[in-house]
Image (cartoon, rainbow, N blue to C red; front, side, top):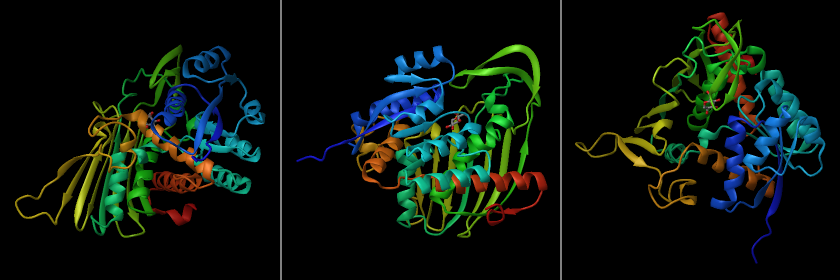
Length: 390
Ligand code: SOE
């Protein structure tokens, strides 16, 4: 007899870009996977009633709330999914955990280490399942890279060079939106983009030991405005406001295992819309990956015979590649939205079986430590160890 599925009733906060990506994943996960937990799209929450009501209808939620506290109080919700701006993560996650709800939180986990620590403490004390939404870990090619590294195919790792390149705010008239205000988001390209790269680095290479960083803000004032969906925005009124977050964040790193890394995150790399890439070099081989060709993993093996050596392109869309077999026949490609479906399938299994999925709030805290160490280094002009920040 097949095992009964556990229904997991979701309450999601935020209904724009990430709200759409997460909603789509909840809808599609039972379609492609057979998780032990089945999401029920119970309620969506946002402050603007007309906006959240329209989102509930379009995205397929059974009800809506305009106050996240009410959402958390509801006894027909098991999981709180936080897609609100960064400065709201801690308060919501802690309240959700105290109410006994499982928590999924968008990245970066928090505004600072203190918040991140309290969030981890809250979910641990409550004994609820917790996850941070680093969706790029769930690209089949990235999962396969992890497998190759774990199998020792690269041998000892020497280098990681990772960059996350975007260009959506290069126009100086692009408005001052929440993603460019320190009090709301904590940092700019650093917490938004470098956070993903350093999460992948921790996943694939290991823990960071120390960092040395710099940050730059190229456009220091912008017309006040707000995000309108995706990464587009509109100007509201004509006033200029100060940009107090970084447009670019660059840092070097040493890892506990002796590897070294170079990282660059920027929203000023013209022509790069979502270039999230890394290359890793080890004693026996190298791998490289780019989100803009997300299904391809390039692999070089120093053990290939002379004459045949060089990077080979692997289309990671065969049943043997993690998560890929849940979708289509070989090379019938998947995209950005599938990274969220894969992540949600892990979360559903985690909640249904009481198993801790990764990346968890512990990863969120460790990532926050690296983010904060780079910020301290950029301010002080010196190398900062992760131990010092933790
Ligand atoms: C905007 O820079 C953004 O949407 C990030 O917030 C996401 O985390 C990243 O995956 C894509 O770009």
